[in-house]
Length: 143
Image (cartoon, rainbow, N blue to C red; front, side, top):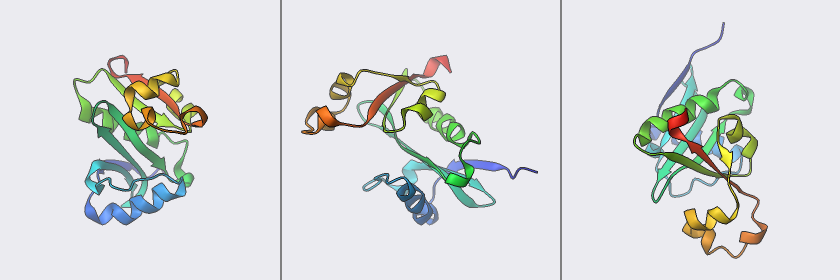
């Protein structure tokens, strides 16, 4: 029997669990409020977390699933929940060193030059030419 996965908004008491999970993948979440995250739980145990930032463009800022639960569709569940927060948007973007995960979810890889147009921190980065992050876009209306 498979335990049921619950996706919900994070609360203050989830903060340490999110920090531990994100640190597993060396993801920087400094300055992001815990309330900006959604989490996946099984029996009240945090097994996944994701954060959407909507500034100039909607962006998946961070997404992680505990290694023991990868490959079970939890990342997709988190992403689907995030998409409900951006109704009316045409696209969702991400910068990642794991493009294959996002491509499996329907994202398409864009040219690196588009990073400079989409994100100010990329435009001014002195390591842009050696950047390991791919930029991807999901057309929301096609899902």
